[in-house]
Length: 203
Image (cartoon, rainbow, N blue to C red; front, side, top):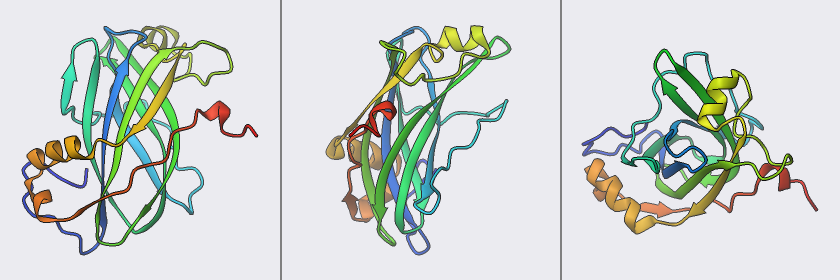
């Protein structure tokens, strides 16, 4: 993350900072709430910045707020060069050490313009893992290893994603964690509406 808890000074001399909140909820398997592991962002010059998750992917993002059997929520900050960026997608994980290790990938393909030496609020992503209703819907994850991916809901589930503007609410949370944000202007540049991958190329 570009910011650390309690940070009182925001340095924008070299890069810009983008702020994003994410809530992820496993409605398919509510007792197995998944973690947001990583969000992939790349410059427009990279058409696809997806990278395979390693076998031992390490710790996911730190949870800011959670509700048992309902959701996990995150405050995210990214140091970015100015220019057009593609928020390509995200990885989610579900782990019980030495028992289950499962992962899923959600394709976002959301484009945003980052101005030089600024702090930008990109919005709030509400991500829901639900059971697939049709074979045409993109699966949240692979079917292998079968037990791990099935128990988590990734294998036969899919992601629904809504982009929301929660600027006032989210900035209170960001400032409580990173007080230095009170000293800078935060521009609101809300991401575009998410389109399901299977609907993206339809006329």
